[in-house]
Image 1 (cartoon, helix red, strand yellow):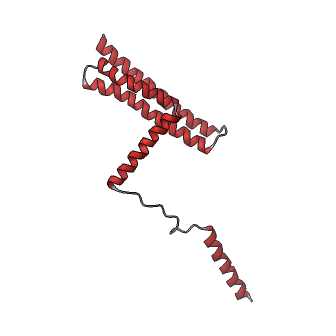
Image 2: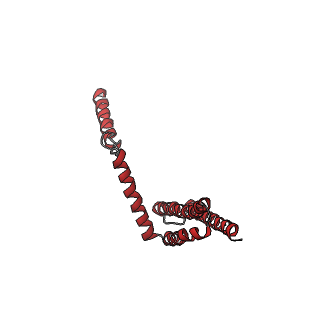
Image 3: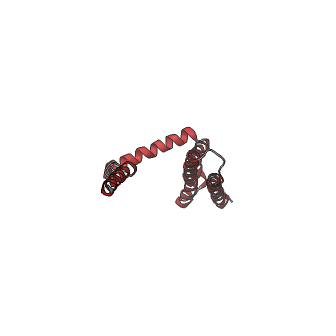
Length: 150
């Protein structure tokens, strides 16, 4: 009698284990491609990200306009290769940080739409990063402009 109960208990626990634990053979991630296929995928994901940022982020669109206006302006303001790299690099850095900020905001909105302190803090950190990039960009342009036009 006791043996029958133990056998049933073991069978029940074995069945419970099978239903609650994931099977590692079924849930294995699919292998990532290598070489050219991986580069092709990365490129297409990057283009998709830029398209989504253009569609959904007004700040990104504004900073792209500033970048497009700033590239030829850098040719007028800068008088050597270092100036060009600094002027255009500061604009590109602003766009990069805006993309990272947009990613942070998107994931925060996915996690919680409620007023959560940590979510708000994360968004504020991202906004602060964009602000610091703007200050750095303006400072770079002001320094090079005053150096070359004084």
